[in-house]
Length: 273
Image 1: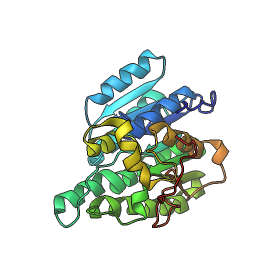
Image 2 (image 1 turned 90 degrees about the vertical axis):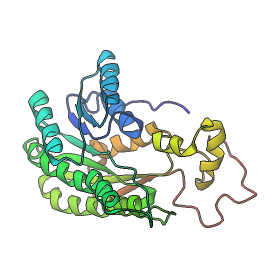
Image 3 (image 1 turned 45 degrees about the horizontal axis):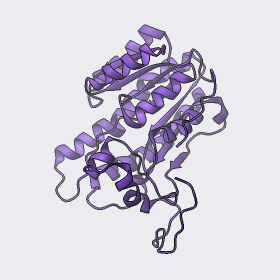
Image 4 (image 1 turned 60 degrees about the vertical axis):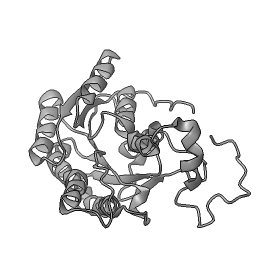
């Protein structure tokens, strides 16, 4: 797949915070923001973020890594404080970090608390923390990471799907309350994207083996790439989307558009891979 072509300097000297930016979709968003001139703070729960930060700083980009758990409200506030201390402003927020706790009948109270605390509750805290800095800049833009799982039933996924469904509704409520401050709030809903969670679930074999398996759920017959989520996210953050708020954008290779027949036995690959 071709790499996304960055739009030069679209975010020059703008400051963005991306939660869960050490790997996967979050890292792709961080990298693409950097390529377009942004100064980026990103969070992560492990030392992997140190490696990401070093690689990006060595490449000439300006990033700040904050290590911690998004379930910790103090950490959320500290991330924004560190961003303001370094760059004195916040223009954009991407709420991406999430806990992939996917359980059904076997879900414990701790499972429910974890997925909601790292997900929609942390999203809300981060937004509460950036509103005042964004107001001082005359407005801003926020993108929340939802999922196709917010809209469909999937086996043994009460916790994850309920939390992603909450993100979908929360986004609309945020958009309504924040538009008075010229802050737009949207969400994206990826389908199956080739990230750590997917290839861990695949348990080995690589793309050649698993694309046909996961791809059966998508018209495009493959998993998506993290960078294919980054481009639409940057669009929603940018002034190109200045009249768009309270919208969820599916990035799902046609997942939502298929009926119960799926691709069907007569499906013929048409060159989208």
